[in-house]
Amino acid sequence: MFTTFIQIFYPDIKREEMRKFSFLALAFIFTIGTYWLMRLLKDLVLYKLAFPASLGWAEDAGRLWIPTLKTISPLFVLVLVMIYSKLVDMVEKHKLMYIIASFYMIFFSIMTGILFVKNAYGDQYLGRTILATSGILGYLFTESFGSLMVALFWSFTVSSSTSDQAKRGFPFIIAAGQFGAIGGSSLLLIKTTVIWPFYAIVVVCLGLFITTIYYLMKTVPYQQMRSDVAEKPKNHNVLSGLKLLCTKPYLVGILIVSTFYEIAGTIVEYQMNSQASVIFDHTTFKWFKGIYGVSINTLAFFIALLGTSYVIKKFGTRICILIYPVAFAAALLGLYSFYNITQPSAVHLLWATFGAMLVVKAVAYAVNNPVKEMMYIPTSKDAKFKTKGIIDMFGSRSAKMSGAQIGGWLNVENNPVLSIQNLMMYGSLISLGVIGVWIIAAIYVGAQNAKLIENKEIIE
Image (cartoon, rainbow, N blue to C red):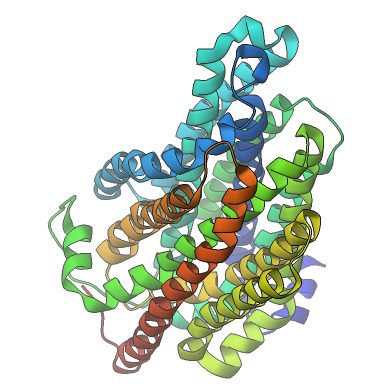
């Protein structure tokens, strides 16, 4: 039945590839489901739980920490990237996923315990330091998970697929992953103020991810887990990924395509979260974040199911890589015009920003993500794992830091209303400028990728 479903919507996937792509899709479901649940929880914990007024914190303390944490995040991730790059040379690619997933299982088990104690004994029992530290570290580890685990999954998948397999199977993996994202996000719609069980679910899902990769490697033949890119053996070097990035314009282009949207996206999402934190209390803020996650990933699922494969097949990666920046610019221009022309109320502005983010995020997950991963196919193992790791982990965090710094610069302490006005007026214009640079890079990368594939060349 499951195979029939796949063949209806993805008829190009060959029967002998079904097991491989089914396991990869299931692993991605656990990865993305876990990430979305953690991503929404990190904001809830930081904004509403880690800095309680009962312990003397200001009501706005959690929100004001965001620019600082976005600044710290790249340095935090840089340490993890160095460890990751060393592990790439030391262990097999599937075992690397076991190690990284187990690391996050341990941390979020501790997080579960802290929140359990908070719920059972109250804020006073844990005190200011433990609660604040758990909120800060929970935010940083979640940010790193979004870069490290998702990047690692795609590095593994790209290195295990040929160019033709990627075009057939990647849209299916993306569509399946939205089930996990919808499921993880929808958990926050449960009417409860108890948070620790959600982190317990995170730990369980990571265990299921490890189990899925184990059975993938055990049951899928080795010859089906190889790329069509041949490369020369190289000496192990933890800095080889950075060297490639600094010397290959194609990889610099991928860096811009893969990270610049995070600058604009962080600014707009900070606008939305700031608006919601002012308007809503703890319970309603939790509900809003759940609706946000479910809506984005439901739309992304239908786009991925019905449109991604067709669009990639019809227009090719050279055109598809431009779809996202153009859609982002259109959504942002629409929001900016709505704000300046209609002078909306706070509630109407919040839902308009929500609508813009809905379009931006859904197109990112359904179209941009599989296409930008395909850009790595004509590259060496060092580029797929080490350079990609630097781009997706450190580069992505740096881009988010830049967006957060812009948001922090536009902030007015103890005046969230004026802060939101600054973000809408000036943050939107800065974001449009960033998107302009991004579009130029996308044109270059798309053209170079087409040449590399046609000439069967490799960036190494």
